[in-house]
Length: 96
Image 1 (spheres, helix red, strand yellow):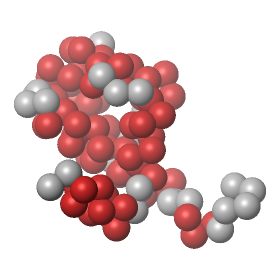
Image 2 (cartoon, helix red, strand yellow; image 1 turned 120 degrees about the vertical axis):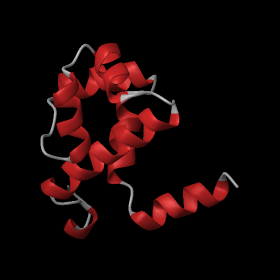
Image 3 (tube, one colour; image 1 turned 60 degrees about the vertical axis):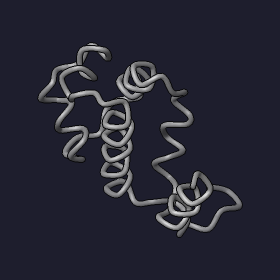
């Protein structure tokens, strides 16, 4: 990214894992099963599990389906994936 140190951009493999973890966190926060989220997003349940485990990275179209099913803007879903652990801890602390 222009003007940004390379250290701020997570490596692709880390981004895949973070994406899956964020999707799982949002899903569990709603009390939904993987099957329910898969149904809401019109995806296969086993594929949903692979996404959450970081085995696969969904296409942008699929990520948009997941965001819509979870009721969050796609940009916010992706933003969560870029947050560092320190950022997440600070955000969680603000909600206490």
